Image (tube, rainbow, N blue to C red):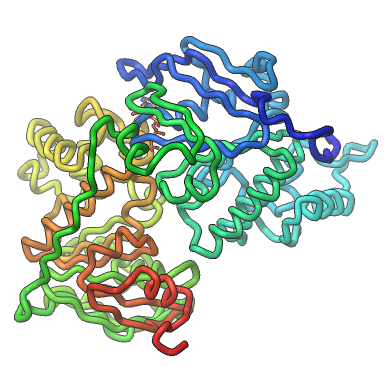
Length: 512
Ligand SMILES: Nc1ncnc2c1ncn2[C@@H]1O[C@H](COP(=O)(O)OP(=O)(O)OP(=O)(O)O)[C@@H](O)[C@H]1O
């Protein structure tokens, strides 16, 4: 196995480029994902890469990590040309990317994941388990990661998994780490712990490329920012020199001012559409609530609050331990998504990779999957009607794609999320349940998606927004704030960000 390295010898040289990609062009069929674009990341900095969905960020990451070859251009590490694509070990010593989607193997222990394919073996070629475990413990201790290496990787929280992946990258010798939307699934406390870790490693000379759609995070943790737009490099500058407005303008190419959300509350006499009675999840979270037609209700809460579990129980993604859900007078069959869909529920699940989409199928097939009756008759689907339906979705949600036939797998992450939303809306649902709907979605697209909510509620749809994102929650008429499995506060529209954040952390500002 390779030895466990200490950190870079000598002082950090802030002028030294650790990674450089120059004049990169990359095409996928007719799509130009990168056009003569590039980036220079210097030692010890935390460099933000931002851009709208489909701007080319993930494509650049694929090229910087040697998973994809550019059609033109070059990659250098520490001033020397990148290794050949096939030499994975050499790439691993230079760069690693921690993705939103885990790359560790759930059925293996943490120790096995850390030393996958570099097991300590004796002369008899047998794996030395005690030695392997000790090495894993030593490695995590070196990077101050407090995780029991005997645990199966599947039992790690997102935060622990990311720390393990960072430690694994460092153990290969890489001192340049790409974090691809690392905060997307973390709560506020998890984000501050991640940032502390980044700061500590940066002080030791580790360089980060940080991809995020949360611009405030970039101001908090990054020194430099690079903006890509439509496959091109637009600017690179110190974060301190770029205002938020200038950043958004660079990303969108237009001078945009964020409109104030117009808030239209539902009529007082609107009928109750959703009743959740003593719903109990297997993890012990409980919820009782009602929502009226046209009402937008938020279920807010941090990680471990139980908000996602109760939402999944409402829509049938998880079987509840008890309680009932009634939609427009119909009691839903517990744990049955088909029954919920049939009763008029539209759903944006938390994990689009697992529950959301069939990646090999086209946009058209995905958005019309739950509404075959809308695009055909007697079991025969009309491709023309399907295309027309999908074209409308593409236009309404500003999905960046050349047409309805494009397989969803070829879309950027944020655009995939919009397809999930399109599918949820396809049935004109009576109840729309959105679980962290804007994860991975760029600033402008967020406005589009949240604008759609405003529109459907105008047509009488009840919307449940399940999130810890203040932007998502701001559109709600009222919020139920969950903490440790219980609703601890209810807030009518007009709450302050501070009181909401405090309530999500379990602190009631009225009583401190
Ligand atoms: N394997 C592929 N096949 C075809 N097109 C692709 C493929 N991967 C990416 N693209 C296209 O390349 C363009 C850039 O996509 P990329 O994933 O790099 O964007 P991104 O900036 O990471 O977006 P997001 O913020 O949504 O993740 C998009 O138009 C996308 O549809």
